[in-house]
Image 1 (cartoon, rainbow, N blue to C red):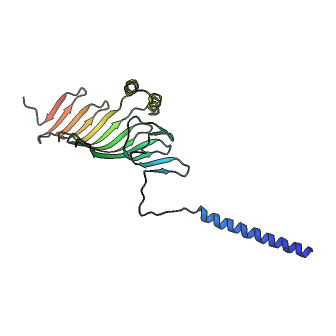
Image 2: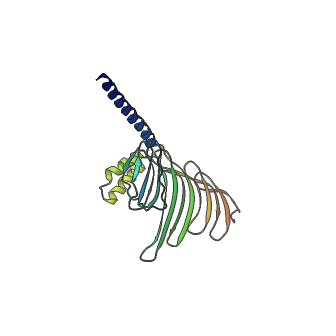
Length: 241
């Protein structure tokens, strides 16, 4: 009987070892990174996330386009409806994006837009590339902007608070907020205006043009130097007396 007991122990022991080995092997396979390939996929929205679930990028159509993201939480946006890509930083806060669109309405009016931008930390865009078409006029530009230091979460708090108010009251509250906070200032503009002129504008810390290089719509070139109040102090070619 003792022999049979030892034999039973060996059988059980062998079974435990086999089960443990199987768990280790299968666990190893399960831990390997999985990769799936598609030739074609139709989808309305894709959320790119880190292993901990932090949202880092959204690719979406117009119908499922997100609101404003701050620290991983989504807040309503008052008027942004488009298709494109939204970039988010390591904290799950909006960090820029790419949007685009274009259409001809029932009256035959054509409109279109494209926009790529990158944001300051917890603020709005500081670098952007834009292209647009409206009322038969085309425009495009590269812009650099200085942003204030207050966190944009303060503005988002206002938007959350007024989201159910009528549009005119919402605008009044936003205007009041912006009037009490430092304003952004454009520092560089390089672009084509709707009148077909092209220009490079270098601005001071207050957003005032200081050097303007321009080719007007009629083809005439000019370089202008301005003081802090916007007055031309010198230009090439010199203005006619």
